[in-house]
Length: 591
Image 1 (cartoon, one colour):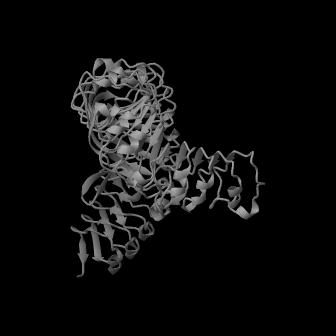
Image 2 (cartoon, one colour):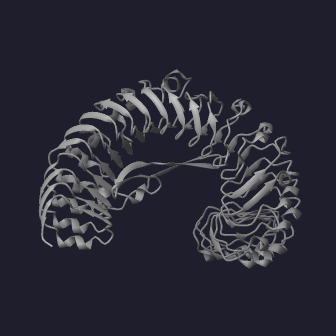
């Protein structure tokens, strides 16, 4: 349905009570709607409506449901809507409404994802029939009003991603006996409860990430028998996980305890879909997990021992998609039994104490991302890795891998965006097949034993010559988003930075600390999207090519410790963003 209202007509009808024009391309509300005086429900959600909410919606005196979500409506809610005595559902979510909330809140509302400001009014407690209250992702400030606890019919309460602060007490929930969904993460609230408190509700979803719930593990969760989704991340909890929590019933599908100070061991995780225990102080061997688990994120803890039990001896791992155990104390070899993890997409075992060779069976998974950075692994790269044709990131840096850089990296891994083989023992020349990687944004071959010339065909690296690609992957579990940032270690401006969400903004090439010879090819000037180029610590000769002056987005350029001669080309004055420039220890002349 296109947005030419004049081409549409509907005969005035007293019998028409439901009108659904959602998910079209309307840029304005068709005027013929005005003749449909008997409408009880109007759905104009997810069109392209712009400007203020039309005042004439207030003329539909029988209206019970009005859905204007997913448009570009702005300004304020017209007073005419407040005269709709039968209105029980008003959805204005995902718009651009800017207004104080106390001017809006009259009835059953969803106001999520707008720009609504001000405190939640005390009068909220007067809406005794309210079943859903959703003001998430706005700019609400002030405290969490106790009057919310008087809404005995409330089933869904969502006010996450706002600016609320202060103390929340048990009394705030005193009459919420029907509450099944509580989504309130990303505020600055502190919950103070007695250790013997038993909540009056039985929730299926509780999200209180970034609240202050600690230092003790919340004992009141013990009485939540229907819980399926739990997020108490970054909640100031410095305790061990109690036994009763580890014996959760298998309806649990998402648990996020990340960014606390939780300690002790975890023997078994009875969670069906997704677990995030990252950035805590858990110790001991890796936990056993539920057979259907898809996400297991254990990064930045003190887990020790072998991977063998988790990967090889567990029950079926067919559904596992994400396995992050980086920044722990794992030892031993990576076992060669990855065949059963055919759906595995992201594997991060970086920053451990793993040894041995890369097992061939890793090449029989469906990996998009493989990170084995900063371990003690060795040997040549197994040819089975060329089967990972969907690989976007390959980070094998800071190990002891050896041999030539395989040509199949450029031939078979055609979707690579990041290739880091930094700080290994690779030798031989840079294979020209690398030049075929048109999506490559970050190439790091530094600190190896690589010989020969810099390939002129580097000019074919399209992503370094054109706008970078976004590389954030987002998964959604029951409304809870787990962002998996594809991070890689880049050496930039003389220091090591771990780039996460901004990777799409940083394109770099680092070939430093090798034994590269010959001249810097002028073709490298075609890579105008490069922000960082490091060729230091090689045996490069000849002049600095004038074409480097074309790389106007360059922020860091290091050509030091080579055998370059001639003058510094004046074209480098075009590099207006350059803040790190090093050409020391060469044979350059001029002023």
